[in-house]
Amino acid sequence: MELRRNLPARLSKIGRRESWAVFWCSFCKQEVERRLKNGKKQKSCGCVHFQLISEANRGNTKCAWNKGKKGIYSGKTLEIMSEIKKGIPRSLEIRQKISKSHLGLKPSEETRQKIREANIGKMGELSSNWQGGKSFEDYGVEFNKSLKQFIKNRDLNICQTPGCMNTENLHYHHIDYDKKNNNPENLTTLCVSCHVKTNGKNNREYWTKYYKEIVSIYL
Image (cartoon, rainbow, N blue to C red; front, side, top):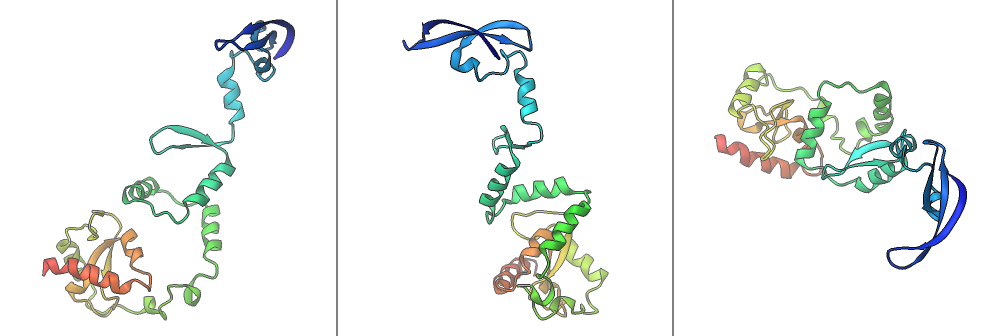
């Protein structure tokens, strides 16, 4: 706002002397009285307050706090928040919400390119989970549609990881990681998210024991 003239000092509520002045608001074309230090900073008397905020925040990314409160963050702030949260596992509820929000969506070419670049040097023998090509082994002839349907029916078409209860994108997991061992007690139903967790080479003994105990309930 434009400073027009100074006014006599006034006492604030706590007894402090403050300088006041008359300012000209170019938006509503009126003179308004403001504290001198405030009036010099303000662009308007408040008549277009929300419009100015909207223009200042244009291009920023909006996101929500955990309690539902909305905040506005710059791209740099979001990058910092992303770095802080790296390595913190998401809860099952959050993963399910993300999964539902992505259903039916196809990644853009830009996203696909980022995924390809991120996986450069991490595929095949260079991968930390490389098992000598076990994933390319053939399944036994017993691993057919009839067996798969039997396993699904036995497991009630639900992911068998306790607490998951996912009924979409179900896979058949070989508990001992032997694709030739297609005995029903060696097979269980897992959603894609839980199945991916079992693929690491360091925890296979743990997952084998874990799902053997679950399948033993049906035997």
